[in-house]
Length: 130
Image 1: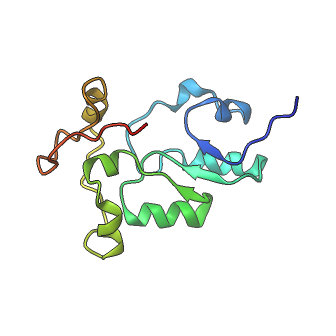
Image 2: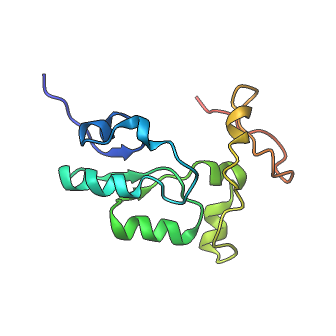
Image 3: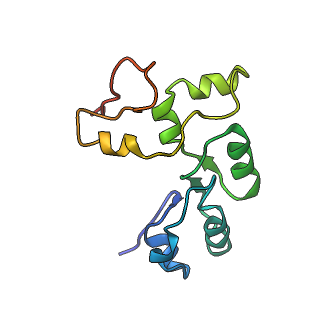
């Protein structure tokens, strides 16, 4: 049977193994756009749209990701920290996320949804929508 994909999200999953990056070597200290060099390698192998995920903490990173290799950008922890971040970027109110990439929000996932433990301004947890 034929397999089709509409896009590729470059993360530490099987796509990198296919293009020759051993997954176990990807654990490293946080840096913005930490999959950028890997996405560049994937881009040489495929023509599908690539989605940036991982380490997008500033508006400059969004622009850099789109300029260098990606077709779209996915925000995760930055939006958990500030769900209105996109609006702040659009209005020129912020250029960086306040997320520290501490990953404490990940620990919150086992509770009643996701919440940035560093942002007391958030009134409630973000819960999954089905």
